[in-house]
Image (cartoon, rainbow, N blue to C red; front, side, top):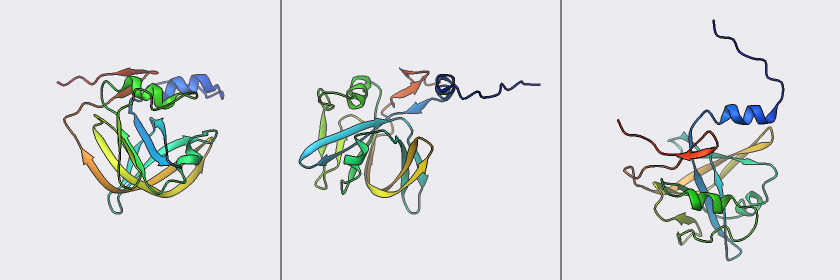
Length: 165
């Protein structure tokens, strides 16, 4: 019989446990007040095909999400292998988050990171409070997929590569 330890509210232990699940990494970006604004999020998932919805989770203390929330459209880029530096830059709390990040803008103001494996042109559908985060549900209006582009994988607090078998 497997023994499960009681959870003692240790945030560091819980974060380490959550790190056992590998995830992709996305960049949510848009032009806001004529300036590029963006952030990285590793809690991305598809939600629905009809209507086309995806979600990301955003910390309540984020200073970036309140600005992005005002954009008519958001670009969601699923980062690819080799985007380690871009991810770190988009996660930085200080300085120019787009320094060294190659990107393009759509006519709607969405920003897409060059070389990503998937680009989704989205708008805010709804937000749901969930603990110390908000589950942000986005409606997909357009996409471009590059399924042969290997994704950036985050596991155990570091970036890893997928191995093909």
